[in-house]
View 1 (cartoon, helix red, strand yellow):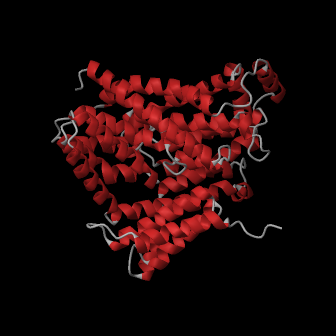
View 2 (cartoon, rainbow, N blue to C red):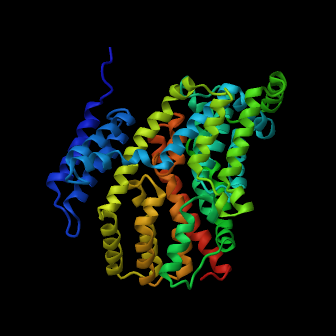
View 3 (cartoon, helix red, strand yellow):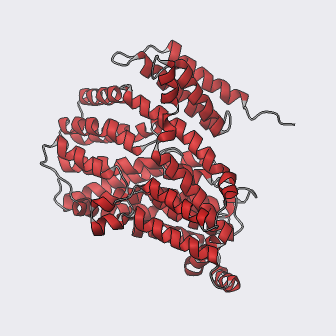
Length: 488
C-alpha cells in the first residue's frame, strides 16, 4: 500500500541543490546573503518540481515553510511569515483559480460539449485543422483582451477541453495522447505569440512602451499601430508554424477524422435547444469577454475600467446565484485550489528575488560581460536577448521579469550599439514569447498545465523547442520586416 507521495531520489537531489548553493558556492560580490539563500531555496524548489519529488502543491507548502523559517526575506519572524504568504494576495493568482472554477460550468451544463461539437463541425476533418481553429480564435480576440490569462486560460482553454472530451481524450482515463495532449500544447503555445502581437494583448506590454520611452528620452514612443504592424509578419509566421511543429514533435493518435463533421452535427441535433444552464454560461462568458476586453472603459472612459480578477469573481458569483454552480462544485475543483497554492509560492519567491536585488545584479553582470567579449552589436544583442529570454526559467510572472530586467537589458543593448527601435521591438517580442518555457511562466500556463493533458517533461521539452522557433522567427523574419518598414 502506498503511504507517501515522496520520491526519495528527486527529493535528495533537491536538498543537495539547496545545500550546495547555500553552504558551498560562495556568495558573489554585490549580492546579499539573504538574496543568495533565497535563490538556493528557489532553485531547489524548481528541481523538486521538475523531479516530482512530491506533488507540486506539497512542494509549494515546503517552500513557503522554508522561506518563513529561514528568514531570508526578513529577520523578524512575523514579517518573514507574512512575506512567505504574500503570494496569496496576488490578484493574478486568484484570476487563475477562479477561471478554472468557472470552466467547470462548461462541463456541468453541457455547454462545453456543444461548443466542442460546433468547432468540430467546422474544422473537424483533421486534428491539425482544429489546432488552427484554436489559433485563429486566439488571434481574433487578442487585440481587445489585455489579459493573456483570461484569453488563453479563461476563454480558449475550456473550448479546447470540450473538443478533447468529445473525442474521448481525457487525463483521467489515460487517453490524453488521442488528441487532448496535442490541442493543449497548441492552446498554450499560441498564447505567447498573440500576446507579443499587440500592445493591448497582455498587461505588461504598455510597461515596455514606457520603459523604452524613458530610456530614449521619449525619442522612441511606440504606438499601438507601430507595434501591431511590426509584429504582424513574425506573429503570423509563428502562428502558422506552431500547430505544424507540435504535430511533428508530439503527433496525436487521432490524425484524420473524416466523419467528425457529420458526427458533430448529429450530436448537436441530439442535444436539442440550449438549456437554462447553458444560456447562463453563454451570458457569463459574453460578460467576461466584454469586461476583460475593457469595452466599458473604451466606450465611457477610464472611470469604467474593471479589474480582470474582479471580473472573474463577478462571473463566478453570477453562476453561484443562478444555481448553475453550487458551492460544492467550487470546493470539489481541486485543480483550482492546488494551482492557487503552488503558483502563490513561486510568485512569492520570484518577487523577493527581485526585491532583494539579485536580478538587478544579474542584469548588470550580463551587460558588462557581453561588452567585454568585443563582438559587434548584432551578435552582442543575440546573446543579450538570449540571456534575457532564458532567465524566465527563474520567474513566475512576466510583469516581474520585465520590471526587473527590461530596462537594464535595453540600456545594455543601446550601449552595445544596437538600433534603438530594433532592440526595443526584439526585446518586446521576447518579453511575451518567453512565456512558452515553463508551466509557471505566466498566468495561462498553470491553467492549461493543471488540466493534466501534458506531462511536465513534455511541457518543458516543447517549451524549449518553441522558444528556439519563435525567437528565430522574431529575430530573422521580424528583423528583415522591420528593415523593410524603415524601423532601423
